[in-house]
Image (cartoon, rainbow, N blue to C red; front, top):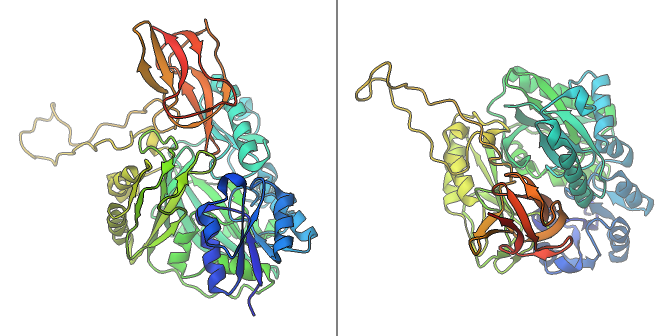
Length: 543
């Protein structure tokens, strides 16, 4: 007798397919949901049934679809409604099982400020938060609901605050249906380390080690590994204690992740409790030899958490996105051919012939490597990335290959602000050995120069592409397909270099289009709400 006869997965792409895979192994029938613009999506072709909905945020429709198709449980995956207590409550009110935390701990974890207050009262250290004038700069504007880098903006001075808040609120509303934000101190040079938790309804809580997620762009993770190569045994033990303490204080159940920043001086600070399955959960599964989705289903069905597992080896995950490897801007197109490596786990969200549209997150696949040790895992990762090929859509594969072989990755010297100091795909400087060739103490150093902060590098907000016009004006064109969300200039207005001209939205992420130089706006060629393709003229600047 299976845990559930039929489960509806309220998600799409690779995470929906990943949940389907476990359900099939357990003998559980599956239901996919899809709006009209995703009716032929990758996930719809692998479910036993598909129910139409208007949006992945349409909670009432999803619950109705579960009842109509005979599903007894709903798995939310990650993103969309996964951390919405109201959705979990609606599922329970309909007599169905929500495969995740109950509404009360979900509501507490989802309210990032309340979670921080609980952490403080439980003796768990946190970063300063509050009014920008109180905590100072740099700071992060963060969505109070949801995660995954959505609704998050780095602000380094007061002049950047208002537009950052407006952008974060819009992005959070589009991704999670809630536009609340808060402010938190930003730590330069920090590592992002998170602890995987499992908790049953009988009071048992387990910490399944930590993941290092410091390789990030746009505040979103690119490469994750388990265990972290940069923390001490004492820090590892402390992270486990802090995480389980927090989980117990919230009355947590099911799978969740406690996220922390570790400053360059080794100080640990809690940042948030993600009450859902993480994108990077496969590295924990590989090292611990378990299926976290299976345990989510078992816990939701009332089982005791009698898990006996011992970590083995080292695992690394690399995320393959449809995005430019240098600008990090999302890309669209049709996958003409796809080749994935053998001998490693590949969680796919696309197939040949699939269209990558601007409506959803551009995550295409995850490569998961497991080896006896970290050097072996990195070598296997390099091989796997060499053997991965996607044609028809621009991807970040060149960036991932560069990162896998980078000396900072090899030596585990990457912090969350890595791309503020390193241009993507740049050639690493050659460091000469002492006494290598002609040497004079006052003419050559054996150490590379200190990194220089590159303004705007890696922040995903480059100037728009420029096409020179007739000699009297320059055409600023869209760097990617998207929807015009906001226009901030008008004809006759003078703008400064890198001043934001308008804001585009694609794949639930906002991208400011900035002026390539100071000048006067002679024409605004787009309108709010207009859908544009890459290369569409947006603004004319006088030169």
